[in-house]
Amino acid sequence: MVFLSNAISNARIEESHSKGELHHDAVETTIYGTRWASEDIPRFDLPEDEMPSNVAYRLIKDDLAFSWDNHIPSSHLFQNRCVNMIARLYHAPMHSAEEEALGCSTVGSSEAIILATLAMKRRWQNARKEKGLPTDKPNLILGANCQVAWHKAIEYLEIEAREVECTEDCLCMDPKKAVDLVDENTIGICAILGSTYTGHYEDVKTLNTLLEEKNQENGWDVGIHVDAASGGFVAPFTVPELEWDFRCSRVVSINVSGHKYGMTYAGVGWCIWRGPEYLPKSLVFNINYLGSDQASFTLNFSKGAAHVIAQYYVLIRLGKSGFKKIMSNLTATADHLADRLKATGRFEIMSEGQGRGLPLVAFRLKDEHHYNEFDISSKLRERGWIVPAYTMAPNVEHIKMLRVVVREDFSRSRCEILVKDIIAALRALDASDREAVAKRREHIEEHSHSSIYSNSVNPKPKTTGTESESTEDSKTAQGIC
Image (cartoon, rainbow, N blue to C red):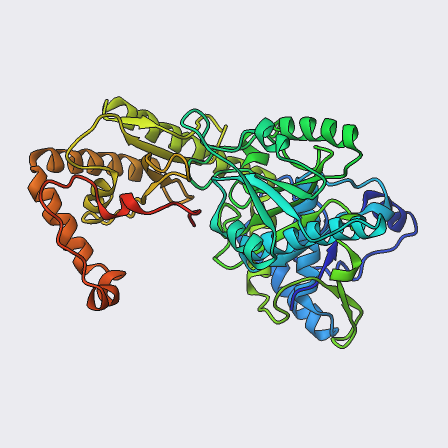
């Protein structure tokens, strides 16, 4: 079950404490004989310090038993806590009980993006209707480097996409070009904190400043949605001074994936709104047939609670200290990998380092060869590595690159093994001729899973030895996963 949760304001918490009250999801003692027995269960703020795994497990196990024994929907309690922690992590306003942030769990960031886009569209429509203006031409501004979920959202919700093209000098959205596209029919601007292609953090602060100026000049109320699917659990710990979240006045909603750097298994995301005014009431359904009055804003009503419980476990298990240690290590490993690849003299690094982007390394060949990045990717698969090769966004799709995403279990020693295997792949390809590379591509294409059925219906002509580009080169990048 998925419910809408309020991020309880500090004012309401202080009022509750002054009256000697405790919230219904905190009246239990879950740790025996340790200091955690005398401390409140983390419910609103992400803990400062790490918690032993067995303690976190016991906290959650006892909470689950308590919830079911008292007929309280346990998933709702854990979602409330996650929403509160994430909202505060993103500096949501907490000064007033009337302006509390709110949010919900989702099936990954794809659902979160659709919900956030729907909220922006409905809010724009409501404002236009009040003024007697037409509502048939909504548009959304986003970079051409956006993830495919955004193409789904604008297609499903019938919104015009105004894409800011990437250039060789700027592989993510230029904030000035984005604001230049804003007009009275713009429902919002999407900024990405961690581009799928190169890991770049788009400049939300500059975008916010320029958009504020344009709104004031024209009397508009256009907001920003930040797609922090990948960077939402990284940037707060590696570059806490970076202003990309609710510290920016025009940021109205943020989505983040729990199964990326939130370190929960696949299938959970989160969407947080700055306040109630940014989520129109007409989109929220109130129900009372599950034991209590609940608000629901979701695409699918029924959903397992395991992902939400796992997310809560990770949050209280690691705390701010644990997240900072892990993300700092990942960033250092990514920087080391980038340095090692650059030192070969064979690659150009396309991603940002030193925490200015996601802990990943996007790179491409510096010079022309009889093989390309797709051939390197294919060669690395022989050694068990899945290093995707792809073309960049529209307008710069002639740029090919490889991408290594540094995750928690990618240690420095594994990094060194990967570097050695990349060098070995280069040497093997250097030793082969153009015809051998072409035959290898033909073999892969013929026996790949994607061609098993298509080839039987529409057989493709064989590749000649003079063709140096792989079949992937002709594909248009419409957003990658």
